[in-house]
Structures are given as structure tokens and as C-alpha cells.
Image (cartoon, rainbow, N blue to C red):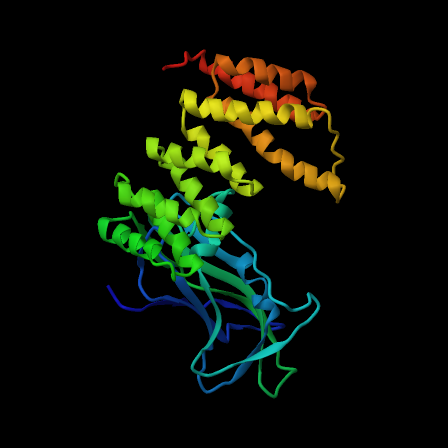
Length: 362
């Protein structure tokens, strides 16, 4: 495999009054073309004058909405969404930048910013579905020779697709992830990626892995704690449940409690249901008599945030609840003054009924 991959295309388009080849080219490049789930995937987009004897300048509004024009397509033909990152320019600003004859780096980015699904922002740290991805870019560019502002070319330029292959997490990659997590000086982004590798590894967690995850939970970084709980959810195990139940017993940060409750949807056990039921029972009295005004900022908003673990518990009961949960859910559906919570409780009851009654096991 080549150490450096560069693909390009020159798109012939029209300028004002005359049909002509685009005076610029777009290049995509990446250090390699195969990456393991959780790897950073650096990609660079360059713009270059076709005639290297010319020095052109382009109007940077073409790249202001760079992420909006970026296309990442999976092997199934689905275009993946990405986070929109805007620069500091005002929308009405049209600055010009010089394009050197040897090419000028316009944008560098990481495919971490590309998400496979709508909930990816808090849980994914790279492309996480194995297979081939096609990365391309199309934009309309305004170009003119330096010193000749009246000689303006406006047209669309498209890059050639850059193909990147995503591989499963192997033993060596998982070993590297463990090393990153055990190194307390590792930066936050690296530790999030390491947790992603653990999440998608097919190896069974060892005692050392659980000890590593416990150590990360001791850090003050909220996003790392949430990621650990998410991993313990999707990699459900007895030891993972012990850690999650410990979080629910001691944690006061609401966002972490939300994630811990949602993680229990992966644990279809009497012990997990008991935790979720207790959350509902404790919150029912506190919030069933409170009316929340949509859109109001202040105490009302704070109360809404405090209520979210309760809401997620009601939802999660619909995922793993059994007939023993009917009483609490029916109380919520009758007593809570919030319309959507009453409706959510009824939906959870319906989900349990559709699955069929489940008997608690010792």
C-alpha cells in the first residue's frame, strides 16, 4: 500500500460567457487508506492552480461551509451525516486567499467528525462500521488571477473519491487501547478513542479491563465517565452491572445518571429492573405534581433537567420491564401531570405486553 494516497479530478465547467476547464483542482489525501475502528483518520483537502505558472486567489466562502459540502458514503450507498463546524467569519464576509503554484492546504479534518447514526455524537469516536467509505467534495469556487480582479471564474469543482477501509479491532489494537487508558497523562481524545476500541472489540473483558474502566470513572472528565458507562452497557456483563449499579448508588451528576439508566436496557435481569423501578418510585412523588413550561429558562429548566433520569427510567422499563413493573408505570400514566410522561408510561406498558409477560428469576 502506498504510504501516501492522493486522488484528484479536474471538472470542466463554464465561466461567465465562456466554457472552459476549471482553473483549479481539488486533491484529497490521507497518510494511509486502512484504519482500525477507533483510529484517528486524518484527511486533507487541497486546492491548486492547474497551470502552475499562474498564481490564483479564491474567495473563501467556498470553504466556509466545508463540512456541508463534504460527502462520506458507506459501502451501502448511504451518505453519513457529519457535525457542522463553522469558522469565525461573518456570513456576509467574502475574503480572498492566495493559492500558491504548488498547491495550498485549504482544510484538514478528521473523520471522527463523521457520524454513523444520530446518537453518535456522545458515543462514537471514529467510523465504527467496517467496510469501505468513499470521501469526496464538491463546491462552487470563485477564482481570479492575482492582480486581475475583473478576470473572475465561477464554477463547480469536484474531487475524486478517496476510498478508505475500516477494519475490525484486533488484539494489537486492543492492547494499544489498554496502554492508552492506563497512562494517566493520555489526552482526552486518545482515551475516548481507546474506549471506542474496547467497545467494538470482540474479546471478552478481563479483570484488568474492568479495573481500567473503574480507574477512568475516577477522573473528573464527564465525557469519559459517560463513555465508560456506555461501553459497560453495550458489553453487558455481571461485572459491568456491578459498576453501573455503583454509579447509580453514588453519582449525583445528572448526565452520568442518565447514561447509567439507559445502559441498564442491555441488562434484562431482575436486579436491573429493581434499580430502574427504584428510580421511578423515588422520582414519581417528586415530579408528578410539578408542571413544566416548555421553553422557559430558569428554575423550570433546572427542574426539567433534574427530571430527565426519571424520564429515562420510564423509557428503559419499556425495554427490559416485566409484569412486576405495571403498577409503577400505571401510577405514572395516571398521576403525572406531564402529558408526554404519561404517554411514555403507557407506551412502556404496551411494549412489555407485546413482548409477553416475563417471570422474575431468583
